[in-house]
Image (cartoon, rainbow, N blue to C red; front, side, top):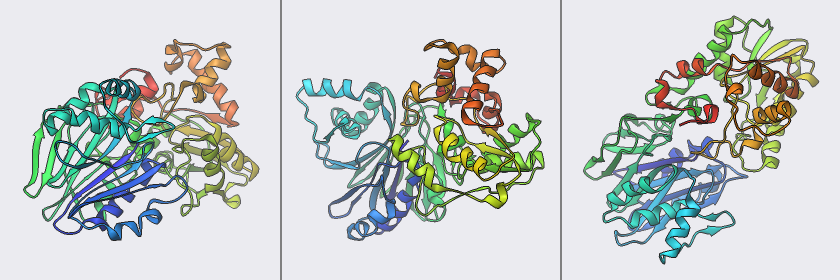
Length: 463
């Protein structure tokens, strides 16, 4: 999932744009980009797959002058793009995933359209969205028309010399929030980007809502709908602890998840730990409920390594997982450890680079407690899980059934014998003393939204 950030300021916005965009660095690992409008458009895009956003843009932002700007941390496509159109020039950034990008691209090519942002992956989905927008009778209708054509999700920031259009995904899979400070405005995926820049949350955009922010302030362009299916994984893993979505704190949800794990557990342990960083909040909640002390047998070397889940290649994921966590032998040796994790996707990193380190340092027992149920389906709305075959739960099912199985309903049912066999298989594969997943109803309760307002596709397969 990408993260996007925009600024409408009364002065040069480049410094706030740099830091606001940087606060989305946990959302993607491929490209970073910024565009500013002053007397002209200024733009910079860098590959950030092997370096930090700030280090790449620290010199660039000093040459950008203007009161309006948008930025992005992208999990796939280079952006922002600057487009010349009959509506005038504009810059655009997008967070989300378009499933039918090739289908729509082929249709546009047959109608005489051209694309300039081709790569080995094919058509740049941000350029595709820009092309779809420019086919509308007006800019606003063009933005609205995008959601009639795409399969997937897209939240959009579109920068013109007059201001910024902000459009939240019609189904609300990805968040978009407005912040305000002394007549200046920020638009962000992550509310944590507001805090140190002095912005206060003014409005959580509804699904499909479109606003325009310019010299006259905030203007409503399309009301959107109250119906929502926001990604539940934002609270469990993807989002930053200091952020909130739909007014619900990420950190508090994680603590409640940990409490639920402990309430449903009867294991005896000497300490509780979380896999840094996203497992920490869950572990704190577990410790609060269980009374076992929270300690740090694994510490993350934060300066050099980001998330091991988001890089696109297994080689890079393994490298980050190997290097970022450093075991503290004196805390580990001889102890029974409850290790809380946000989720188990492929299982390879947890097995080879986390649990293995605990055993090698003399752990007596290792009890794994993920804060969500087994992931059973790839995400259709963001580059999170990419295929069924890579999911450890599906590997377990394939091993137990000795074939690929389309109907996995019994394995989803946490009361069934097949579910228990699957969990036992995964636990043995990981090398854990015990493995116990969060119940889906407890996860939903921890988030605090009605079930129908959450996208649970990667656990349930429906949406």
